[in-house]
Amino acid sequence: MTRSGPPALGTPTSDQVADFYDYLGPLLSMVWDENFHFGYWEGPDDQVSVAQPTDRLTDVLVEELDARPHHRVLDLGCGAGKPAFRLARTTGATVVGISINCAQVAEANARAAEEGLQDQLIFQWSTRWTYRSRTRRSTGCSRSNR
Ligand SMILES: C[S@@+](CC[C@H](N)C(=O)[O-])C[C@H]1O[C@@H](n2cnc3c(N)ncnc32)[C@H](O)[C@@H]1O
Image 1 (spheres, rainbow, N blue to C red):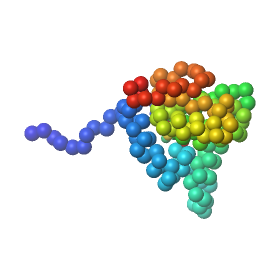
Image 2 (cartoon, rainbow, N blue to C red):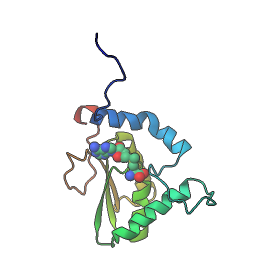
Image 3 (cartoon, rainbow, N blue to C red):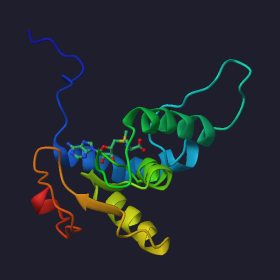
Image 4 (cartoon, rainbow, N blue to C red):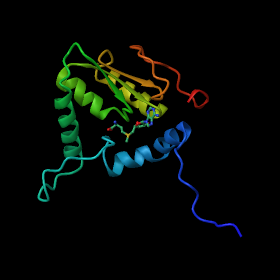
C-alpha cells in the first residue's frame, strides 16, 4: 500500500514565482500595500494603516544602508518599486531594481518615467541568478527567457 498525503513542498520554479505575483500581486497591493514586506509597528497602540509601518521598515533599512547620491544600489526583488522610490528620494542614490515579474518591472519603470525619475530609478526584468550589472533598462521580459 502506498501512502498518500499532501504533495511535497519543493522550491518553486522561477515561472511559479513570477506567476504568483501575476495572480496575487494586485490583490496584495489592495489588501496590504505596494510595499510587499512586513511593517514596523511601534506597539499595540499603534493603530495606523499598513502603508506607514511598511514605509517605516523601509526607512530603517535605508538608514542602515547609508547610501549617498553617488552610490548605485541594487534592489534585488524590487516588487512594484515602492521601497526603491523611497530610497532614491531620501538619499539621492541611483537604484537598479530587479524582479522576476515582468508586470512589476513595467509598472515601476512607467512610474519612474511619470515622475521624471527614469535616470535615477531603473527597473529590469532579471532573476537573481542571471542579473548582470547594467545601467540600461532591459527589454527582455517574456516567459521564454524567465
Ligand atoms: C516579497 S516581494 C518584495 C518586493 C519589494 N522588495 C518590497 O519590499 O516591496 C519579493 C520580490 O522578489 C521578486 N523575486 C522573487 N524571486 C526572485 C528571483 N529569483 N529573482 C528576481 N526577483 C525575484 C518577486 O518578483 C518580488 O518582486
